[in-house]
Image 1 (tube, rainbow, N blue to C red):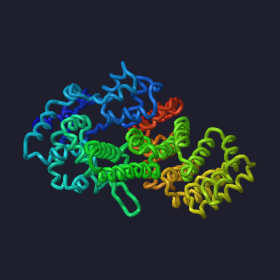
Image 2 (image 1 turned 30 degrees about the vertical axis):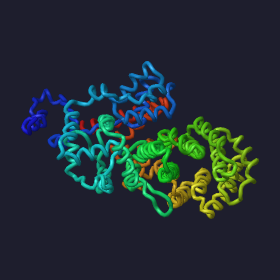
Image 3 (image 1 turned 90 degrees about the horizontal axis):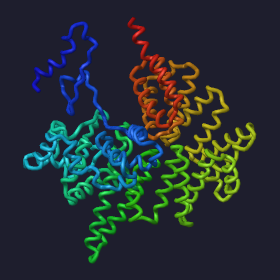
Image 4 (image 1 turned 90 degrees about the vertical axis):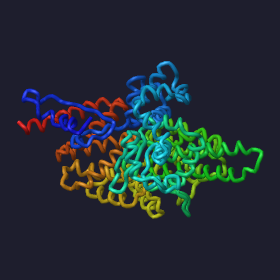
Length: 567
């Protein structure tokens, strides 16, 4: 379509007579059209929550475990056509049978859902030698499926020759898209509908070569261990990726390539390959450790689901540590049934000489019982408290639980003493957990003062979110909207997205109400629209009909306000 035709379409609504002013024109395109830039809407892929909602509506929530939903999301990659294909197969097969099928998206699927022009563009890259670097970028991105920056692609010699022109070419061919996270970071991501098609045309050797090259870019060795790349952290903080970065996929392929070399050289000296496998075991456990200790609980569950069978094959003796991480992640998301299941698996496999993990199991069980059976929690704390050192988290946590059975005055005094001791010992997350309990007995001025202390001291993302929400809840309920700055609204919006991704439902409800009240007070239509949509997804997933009806009515009232002002 030429430029004149596009400009005609842009101006068409203005050419209509008065009686046609309420006529709407909707155009769709898989590429950005400059002439439409001022009024275009970019459609993204489905999130995990949206995928779950579609599965629940079409097949029923009782048919799936959380792990199965996560696996379906991983296989469909948020692409509607892929999810439709999976759901079609589920009509006549069990969930496990479908997930075990490696060829869900076979050649027939690719032919039916990938446009001929797109397949021709890929074939052109394969046959035209002048397009070799563009093809290489496409192949790399098919493995780094959640996207990567050009800067990071060039950090390995495989991508050293890549340039902005190659990015432009992939976007022009509709094979990739770009997303700007901040002024210095632009992510290039393969079009997910073609990812499996591209992979199917690559050799295993090529996949392994790319994997081993970019694992070094994603997981960086340091003197203290390993760290994830800065992009990995930006992806998480921005909410660009809902469940998983590229690290899990890279680890999976890297381990697969190492095991293949060991099998091929079984009659020869495999010392180098065994050393490589040990390093990958360490990388896998470090990756999960980083996720769980940065409060990325949804990502922890997704990563362990992805790596579980492989870890069971190469590191079965340490599988119990992965179960402990799962138990913690599920407990934090208030899925107490799954938390108990994995805690029991961990305890059954944990060796007696691993005192640290045994202590973690005890503390996790205390927290679990505190939420499900406080009497059992108090009884366990009394029975086990003295088996731990008085300066340990386990001992102080035990005393905190025991305090729940005391009268209000004694309970308050005990908790104040425990918070002071925990803070002095630099157990800041535990100290702030106790502080949140104590704050229920304080006035608003003192509450805010204490919450500011928690915000400054806690390294836990989750507790930072709690403290920030509780502080702004006090301000909103007191009608002190003028004390809330624009940056506070930005922070609350980021927290809201974090809670939505992690599915912390109780905190999400609180944050939703606070943001809604602030947005309504300031007439922030952009915030109202964003949280109404995401909130509705959560209400429906949780069958929370009360909140769904409440916010629908509030939304409809808010929608009427501009019309009334216009009149």
